[in-house]
Image (cartoon, rainbow, N blue to C red; front, top):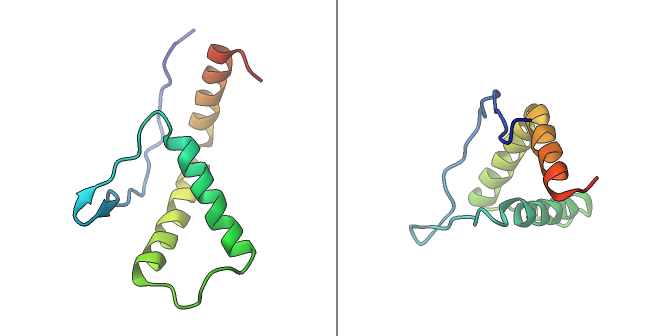
Length: 95
C-alpha cells in the first residue's frame, strides 16, 4: 500500500495569503482543516440564517467570492479528498 497520496487534480483558484497589517497570517498545518471547517460552517450558518448585511465591505464580498470558488475546487478534488480520508482512516483505525 502506498503510504502517500497522489494528487492529480490541479486547483484552479488560489486566493492571496491572509494578511493583517501587511503581515502574513498562516493557518497552522496541524489544525488547518479543523479551523477552516468551523469557520466555513459559521459563514454558511450566517447565510442560511440571513444574518449577513446587504452592505458587505469589498473585503467581505471578495472573501465570499473566494470561498465560493474554493468550495467548487474542493468538490473537484473529491477523489483526492476521499483518498486522503481513506488513508487517514487506516492510519487512525477509524471509520
